[in-house]
Image: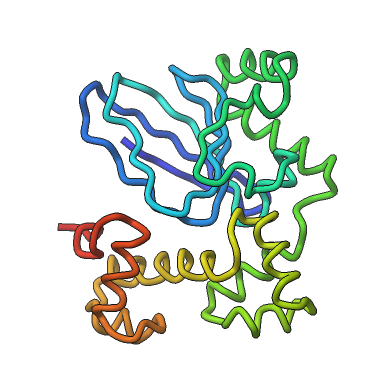
Length: 228
């Protein structure tokens, strides 16, 4: 069972998930986000930005509480470049040391939602908020802007944009653009738009191009990700 709601700050999202023993793994699609997690089995964990789908669950029963930080916000909260967390699940103690992590873990055991929110709000305040470039770049690429146009709008050379994107998002702007475009495409398809129209609207060459790109990022074709 999965539920989510706005966290009330920085466009972050709080979510909860409970899995039963032996349930089929859940396919978590890449979205450019970093998640701060609490697990009833693993404690506090950071999920870095993924380049391809991550299969979660499939083992013993487990309860999860997560705080999904929007693209570009993770480094301000966690204090490390997103590229160092790419495609990884890292115990929080490995990032912040055992003493701090142990104190936060005790808080999370009592109230994981409050603990994750308190951690993120306090760290964001100390960092002076997220780098505003992250939201600008993510919005431009999500809207279909080219990498060249995004770099020009940000006042950066393409190589400088690439470096900043690796720090903020975990990968370069081309990869981020593909991931965000897949998210737009799947949202339209799940709302009932035929895949051929989705492909044209989102800038794919054709439906076959959409299918190849989704399969490359998600591991399955788009039809496998739509409601039955």
